[in-house]
Image 1: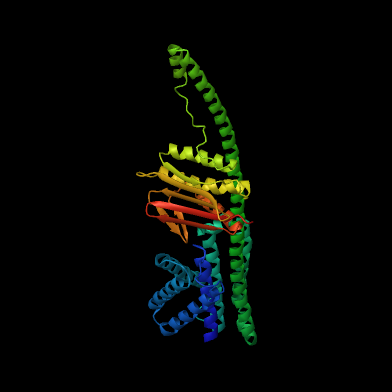
Image 2: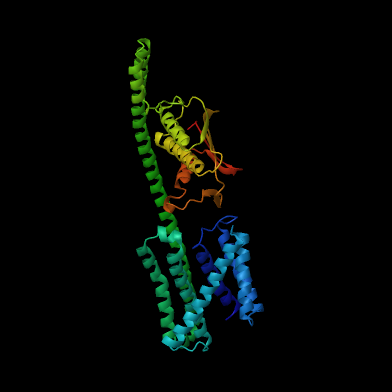
Length: 432
């Protein structure tokens, strides 16, 4: 096999590695997306050099190949060393497994002499790469969370037809020894087979795009569900506030009655009446007034929730009557930020505090929520996530929805820890 053909085969292998690595996490390239091409060619070139220099030492060759995959992955992508090593070793395992499976099929099923002619060996290699693609496709469906959640099983089976057909074509070619019968057309057949494998690679990349679109569709649905949920919560809170205000009105009447009993010095009747009211409270009173009824309901409700959690609630507000955001989006932003803060302080063993700032300044709607937390956070890319395990499907969806609203209005957001406090800041322009 000449250098060009060897290089093409290695390019196929490196493309397979790129597909395989995407099973574990979405690639985050430091540069532009077109650098995927550079990524593949750089690795292919290095692997080709290693194959030429250390071809007589298979073990050393595979070790160096793993080093290449790990190094290039860490340089070109934002991969941690441990993850890069795991992915690289697993890929080399699948690569060798594909070779072994191919040899077993050729030797035991089709009785092909793998030490035969040059043309037969070429087709055996192409068959091996097709088997590798099929193994990766199966692995992605079984192990990839993104594929498992996003792509329908029927779509996977449909797209698996292509690598299966490719394997069948190559096996058929080997069986009838077409390369031996048509020596003059060997180069043409070789190109056709390589093109067939390349088509399979494109199909799998297409499946990745399909998975991404399905994921975005699901996130959009979750966003709409979250908006609806927050809207229903707001309506429920609004009804509760009305009931509480009605109760507060009754308390005022009670106070007038108590005052009358005192003036008449009817102390026994007053004592009995006070006992009847001993379980009452004035929780329905608004302690926060922003001149915006929607914001008032949310902030007052969350104020009492924070108090029940044992947290001090410090807030800075001004007149928010001028907010022009859609009501549902306003509810979503405030509710999610405050829900996260209350959930965090509930888990705190020591100081429990929530600092809230909701103001309109310089034609910008500013929401700043700072809360104490127990220090347990994990970082996923540029995002900070809590370590809670329950409801993994909706994990972090609240913050994602907040970000979507902010980006819709070309605003600014920041989520970051500051010592034992976590800060969430949202700034939305009012000139839309």
